[in-house]
Structure formats: C-alpha cells, structure tokens
Length: 355
Length: 283
Image (cartoon, rainbow over all chains, first blue to last red; front, top):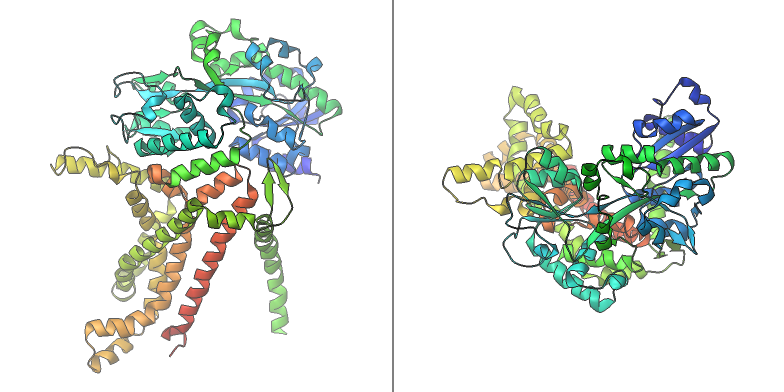
C-alpha cells in the first residue's frame, strides 16, 4: 500500500463520499486537499465536483503549524493542495515543498484585489507559490454594554479601568505586532525589530500581562468568556462578535487607527503534483477563486475571497460584514508576516508570560 | 522451558515498546543536540540547547515551577488522601466497592468538562462568588478565585486525588492490624503507633501514589492554561510553542529531555525509598 492509498484509507472519515453518484469512485483523478474544515463544506464544492471528473478527499488541519509539520515530515508527496497562511508560505518554499502557481491555468487570479496582486508575501524570486485565497481581520471585540467607549490598542497597555477584564490571544506573532503598533513602530520595521525595539515591546507586554484576565487559545473559549462577563474586551477573531450579537448581547468591534491585523490564507500546490492531477488541481484552484465558491463562502463563512469574482453578487449588508463594501479598509491593515527572528519573538513572548 | 515460552510471549510486547516508545525518545534525544536555521535542521551536534536552557531564567523558572506544582499537589493529595484511604480500607466495610467507584467517578468525565465545571464554580458570576455576595461576605466577586494559581491547584488536586488514594488504599489493605495491636499491647500510644508502624508500612503506597500524581501534574498543561489565567504558562506549553510556532524542534527536544531526566531521577529515588521501606523487606 503506497503512502497515498494509506493516507486516503486513514482519512476515510473525512472522505467526500457524499459527492455525486457512486460512479465517481472510479473517477480518473483523485485529489487530496489539506485545509480548514470551514472551507471545504460539501455544498461549496458540489458544483465543481459535478462538472469535473475528480474524486476529492479532504483532510482537515487544526493549526497552520500542524499543516507545515505534516508536510515537512514527508507528507508533501501525499497531498495535492494545501492551505498555508500568507505569512507562512516562506516556510514551505524554504523547505522546497511547493511548485509555482501556473497562472495560465488560473484565469480567476486576474480578479485578485490589488493588495494581493502587489504583495511580496507568498512569492519567492518573483514567482508565486501561495496564491491568496480568502482573508479577514482580527479586530478588538468588546462588550459594548460593559465599556464606555470604543477601545483601541491602548486599552491593553494604559489605565486601570478594565484591569482583570481583558484577554489576549496566546500567540507571539500577533501579541508582539499589537505591542509594536501601540508603540508606533513603523510598519516597515515591525517584522525586523532590533534588540532595542524588542526590549521596548517586552516592557509594554509586561504591563499588558498585569491587566489581563487570561490569554485565550480557542475562539470558542473566548466566546464563552465574553458571554459569562469574565472578559469585557479582547484582541479577537470576528466570530464572537456575530455569535454573541445573535444571542442578544450588545457587542462592539473596534478596528484601531494604529493598525488592524489582517490575515490571509493561500492555496498552494506541493512540488510532486504532476500530469493530470496537476491540471485538475489548478482547475480546482480556479474554482476556489471564482464566483460560485466565493458567493457561498461570503454567506456561509462568512469570509471574503481574495478576488472580486463574487463581489457584485453579494448584497451590501453581507459585503459590509466581510469587509469588502469599502475596500479602503485594507489601507489600515498590517498583514501578518513571518519575522526572520521569530524564535527570538517566541522566546520573548514566553519570558513575558513566565514573568 | 517455561522461561523460554515466557520470553517468546514477551517478545512482541518488547518489540512494540521499543519501536513506539523507546525509539521516538531516542530520536528526540538526538534532535536535542542539533540546531535549527529558519526551517532547516542543522545536524551538527553540540550542547548549545542544554546551555541555552541552563542560561535561561525563563526555562529554568518554568521547569522549577512545574516541579514545585507537582510537589505541592502531591503534599495536598497525600494529606487529604491518607485518611480517605484508611477509611476505605479499614472502615468502609460493605460500602467499600461503592465508595471506590464513587472516588473514580470524576475520572469518567473528560478534562475539559472538569475544567469548565470549575469555571462555573469559581467564576466572577460563579456559584461560590454569588453565594458569598448573597451571604454578605463580600460586595464584589473575588476575582482571584478563577484564573489564578489558586484555581489551577484546586483543579489539579481534584483531578489527581484518586490516584493518590488508590496507591494508599492498596497499602492500607495489606497492613495487618495485628501489628498495631501488638504495638498497643507493648504500650505504644496512638501517635507513636502511627509514626512507627502505620506510616512506615504504608509508605510504599504513599511513594507510589505520590509519583503518579507528581508525573501527571508536571505533564498537565491544559488545566493551568484554562484556569491559570495570565500566569498559566507551563514548561509543557513552552515546549509546545517551540515544536509548533517557532519550529525549534531541537530546543524543544532538549527541554523535554531535561524534564525526562529529572523525572527519571525522581523515579529512581522513589524506587529506592520503596525498596528501603519496611514493608518490602527493609530493616
């Protein structure tokens, strides 16, 4: 049993058995996509599978790091398509795990928003290895009924009104980015901070720690902390804002003027994918950047695709919800990048938490 | 002949353990001498990672904190578990089976369920705070009940108490009451009987239960992470960060092996103490 067959058998639980007729089991091309569960819902992919002779197996990841570890440990030969973060693509290219995107086979890539066309992230030596796929922001979410005014990053570093009522994600990259934005460190220096700047960052992070109720690790847990009133304000992902609003809580979402952390995941093709499989993979990539998938993701996610393919088919309210109504919002984004001294960042983060 | 059959029967299990337990640990040990350059492992052996651990107040502090927590929870569970185990072995009578089952009931639920149950009890809007406010003991919720080292150690004690009790209960079960009667006949008073007969004879159970609790507390990072608040970092979560986000497998391996070496030293000490105890053939 080769590795591909073994992996597919082991992943039978997540196999795409529900797609189409049984005859698909004999389809010419088998594909394996390593991705987040919320991106590969059956109804999102059904139109593609109905019109292509492809048998798609999905394997779900829990974290970006887990995905990289699997590929780095030799999984690249088993997988046809992966979903790394835009800031993590350099990990894969440095490990020689990816092949360049064949733009001739991905016409929908022409519809990428300018910010994604221009970014150097996901590229090596001028070639794109991770094509931006979908994106969003990580804002401040707060209990509007328990706070007097809309907060910005300073709420985590100044004053004592909300001491013991704040939460921060337990993630070195974003935690240090926020401290840097608060300190006014220029964006072009943020990911290459020198020792002096990192010392300043550490100093304010120690102050921040004294104000926190906790560091959060899962978004479900943070939602729970908001709901029970343990936390009134947190650096967050978007879902608790909508989830708790729906349940009747008065929630607020702040996008600080000092900068908002933007995230973007890409789709990338491992190096060994060739021939008919490669053609089918790029057809799938093109579908994932197209209008049918984009519309379903906008309402089902709700998340914004990296292309404008579906934008005109989405109503203004939903556009607002996924931040594509006024695209100037992107001007204030600080896209996550992989700092060259990331080990030092992680060490600093642990020093602060252990202090 | 029977020895040969026994060896043959043990061979698959031995091979299984060697392949799935010992070999990964040895690989981890080898990695602890390498270093990482961005995402590439440099297979150039050195003691740099161990020197880094020795020179880092953070990692030293986290290792110390882990063993400190382990020792504290062992002490608390021993004090609570000792009379409970004595009662189960010597006084429970026909209720013994039912009480032993009851003791293990918390273990039937998952770790997360127990953590969230503690949050319901200790939270600002939790049962204890509401009761205290209702009783007029305090005007505002006591924030330190949850997301604090106190909350962490309460939950750790609750989680691992059964393991201490089981170890002690087995020791009490094999304690022959005739020894205590003989001591009493010879004029020993109650404190003396406890110190010179009961404690030495149940000591192996105390050590076995203590080691079990100690190892599990040192390795538990979920409870401190979810109940410890901003101070909930553990050495295990630091290792997790190094293997995950930082991709520094060599340093993560070195910390893991440092922990393992210290734990092995504790086990060796425990085994020595048990061997020397009077129950197993000491003087």
